[in-house]
Length: 213
Image 1 (cartoon, rainbow, N blue to C red):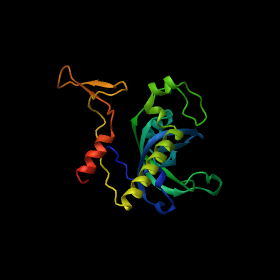
Image 2 (image 1 turned 60 degrees about the vertical axis):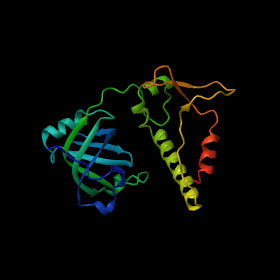
Image 3 (image 1 turned 90 degrees about the horizontal axis):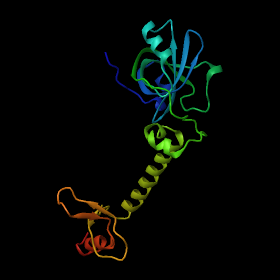
């Protein structure tokens, strides 16, 4: 039976100890200790250590875990338990707990990566853009998206509290004769006609003001 995620990796805490959970994400790293595998599973919220013990999981699932490469996408079901004192990782918010795997589903098996996703890896921009879905998994990229989200939310909240109404005006409109060159986009529904970036965006603001918005 297909597994279904119940918790994000990075949101699991000591309050979840003893609970059965299913976490999903991509393989950040893997360590083989001989009969026991440690996989760091990462999703949008953070990293969770998953323990695969050959004595407590089916041989097929353990073999599948042995064969996964970094950035493979997994769903893992099992019990959350407290880490031993010597294995606590204070750098992670989930560093005091781990998921003891009982079943595994390999959602997507990764091939050899075209470039390293390490924080300090230097990669040509053309290669990053070719594999943009991998590039977005780099921590720096995700932090940038999170920061932009928080700034936008803060700006919207500031304006909302002061009675402003957010109205989206057109990004493309009818071309108007201006001094600057138009950025034209051909219309598929009106052959021979074009849309353009607004040369006078203040017109929309004026329309809203006169319209009483």
